[in-house]
Length: 246
Image (cartoon, rainbow, N blue to C red):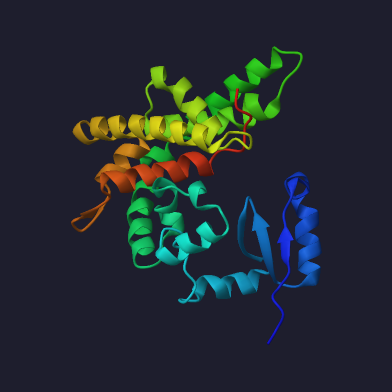
């Protein structure tokens, strides 16, 4: 019987200089047992081994499955993954993931993405002009965080009056210092806003990404309201760097 693999703790040093950690791990081997934010799992640092893992049907990404929940509970991290987070396409296996990806791909190939470049340039220029007028600037908060949030608001057609709240809720969700309770409150507010937007775009679709996701279909198959909200949560969180809560 082989000895259980050592669990490597990924501390704050990892976040400060992850490349050094990855480099050291690659020298030791392709597969490592890690603890990250309280969750114990596996880290693959070799491209070919990662490809094999993704193609292995016995390996599941379903955090929401009974087995996934049992592992999270064992490590005291189940509360980190509520239904909205754990039940999206990032944590889905085929055929569910295949179906969701097919529908989402149709929307991302539409005009909402294709025609956005001039608007992104305008947003970036406006933020840079604002930065240039100041003597002291936090680049993360003033540019690296605000640019993707502004673009995501454009993609989803978020009304101007709601963009400030949208930015604040997202800052809480991706913050390293926010509590689980603060994240939960921000998540509820976000999904309440999304539900309203989905209803409005369903009645009156436009050229924004949300409208394209609503009308996207594969034969008679479409995304339902919960699936739409979870896709948009992936877009929002996946597009934003960590930001301090203001």
